[in-house]
Length: 83
Image 1 (tube, rainbow, N blue to C red):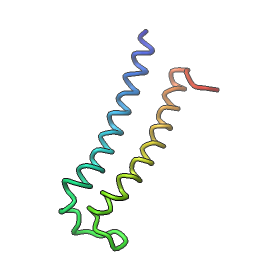
Image 2 (image 1 turned 120 degrees about the vertical axis):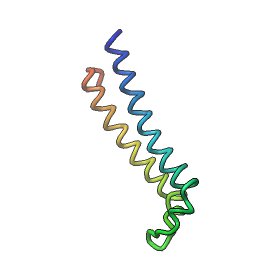
Image 3 (image 1 turned 60 degrees about the vertical axis):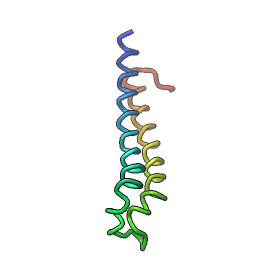
Image 4 (image 1 turned 180 degrees about the vertical axis):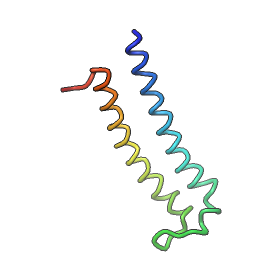
């Protein structure tokens, strides 16, 4: 029982951190802070616009790969990996 509780607690910690990063990039950078970030440019586009339209999507895809990596490590640690 303790082993599974620790596994799920760690899993939820990973999810919380990754979703917080995604929220920060998509909502804060893409919406709330967009006007302040529009002073800077990436490839000719204002940074706030870039975060709202592409940055949040790129971040989400990268976070998916990070989550897979972290969960594979966690599965091996708790010996529940698929071999």
